[in-house]
Image (tube, rainbow, N blue to C red; front, top):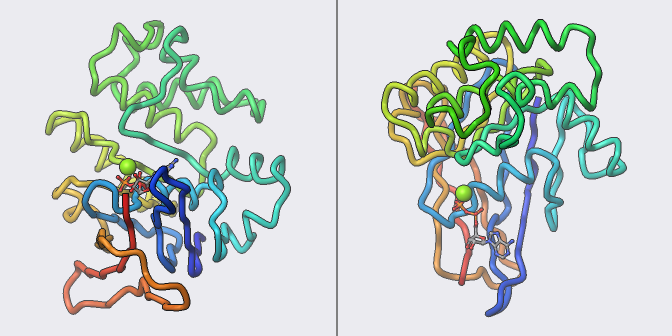
Length: 246
Ligand SMILES: Nc1ncnc2c1ncn2[C@@H]1O[C@H](COP(=O)(O)OP(=O)(O)O)[C@@H](O)[C@H]1O
Ligand SMILES: [Mg+2]
């Protein structure tokens, strides 16, 4: 479903280039839940932005359902993103002046799906937000905000969910609700790529990938491999060397 092939991304920093991803490769199939862990600054958010068609890599390919996202026009990529990918962020990114219901419905603006309203109501109900539907985000608890964001991410029935530290601001109970919802989405045939510090991710994900931060920028011409190592247990760990300097 999602294929990242030898992806590289470097930012221009004030003290020179910052290498965020070095030759990163990943295959994520239907029904798979992969969690990426690693210290702050190791490139987790960059990875999700590149995977989601929001940030063009310097090198490598990103295929979603066989389509090379960065070969598409901007508009075609935006359409693909809108109908196939749901995003969940640590900071929720809800629209402050819209109600829960309208926040959940925002992805439908681009698509005008006839059943969007009913589906939004179903999701709101499923995440225990029915009584909160007319309220704006400022009137919600943190957990309710993230559940609203989760409902919004699921509205267009995406194939892929990309989640950036979605439990980072939540208490344990709400964190569990979010992780369970991601796992359920994968069980239903979707694919989940979660980046997180949360140790509980290991208990819900099928595979874990460890992203490492290294202090050196690799010499040009040297290739570092972000390969996955299969382990003997249900938890598979892999190490992706990374160059970085700030
Ligand atoms: N827009 C940007 N401009 C310059 N450097 C950036 C930018 N975004 C991220 N970086 C740098 O790239 C590295 C990876 O960042 P990020 O992907 O946000 O890591 P993480 O999400 O794991 O904390 C960090 O060193 C960060 O400072
Ligand atoms: Mg981040």
